Image (cartoon, rainbow, N blue to C red; front, side, top):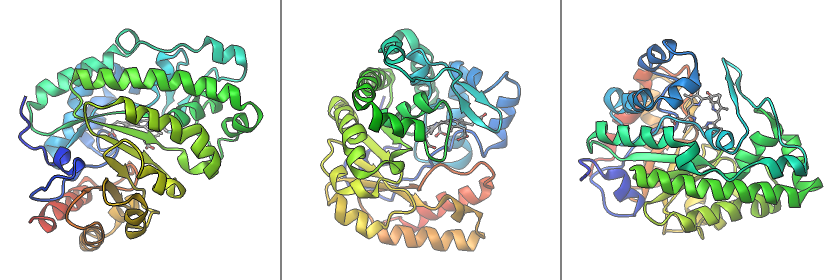
Length: 343
Ligand SMILES: Cc1c2[nH]c(c1CCC(=O)O)Cc1[nH]c(c(CCC(=O)O)c1C)Cc1[nH]c(c(CCC(=O)O)c1C)Cc1[nH]c(c(C)c1CCC(=O)O)C2
């Protein structure tokens, strides 16, 4: 199927584009009343994630309503630990909880390397339905969490300011951590390859908890597994978004991937100098900038576009859009990118 709008893919590959492509992390769900309407008819978040027709519907909503240049499949990074045998619960207005956490060698032993076709078929089906219904309008992004971020949830059992149980494991039982990271990485590679087979046009790896590790730990327990994933996914472009990992930008320049995501704390010029000229950068407007006035949003967006320059840039926020953001402000950001970057 030929894509009608392939700006995202061309920008990822460093090819010239008529304008800068734009989408938002966490664009599916959260901010749209149309999403909440679908969600309110269901038992919970997981029913939505596990029902391919509904997941496809909310994946496509931002394409219809916000006019973004890409769709991202509606799912969660936590479906991977679940497939490996650690089920999660999504607690209303609190976030995810794992009733059972990983503590001992026996726990790691029990964790399985999951077969995506057997345990994550609902995501692959959602990708197939979405591709059919998108009918080539925009590319579809598949995703997974980076192994370190997944380990952090499996060991900690929930979100945390410090993730001190997970970080303790890196000091106290580094070999155990590596055994678990090995299993997560093997599962993730098989899962991402299956997403590409099902129709994903680009893959993004989210290392949401990169920024809490010291640089040496980051290299040993996160970067090297991300690097393996990048080497394994050869069929489509790959984006690595490691929140807070400014200390690793130079090494990210060496990854076998096409796009590096920047969070809003990162200086655009410094990041470009560190990463080098051969990768596309994605980001990085502060999600809070969307609480500004329409005029303020336009100014901040133009400033960001000027700093990135006209090529090798995919416009986005520096992290997921906040749930209480006015969709009209999101549209203002998107329209400003489209108009101001027109060449
Ligand atoms: C850390 C992480 C998670 N999930 C994800 C990450 C990495 C990105 C990041 O750093 O923000 C990734 C994710 N989660 C979700 C998507 C769907 C696609 C999209 O980006 O729009 C994606 C890409 C849906 C979701 N995942 C979740 C919701 C909200 C739940 C609901 O609608 O009831 C959605 C739409 C729940 C979730 N899922 C997670 C948390 C901490 C929470 C609770 C708080 C929150 O909303 O962010 C784990």
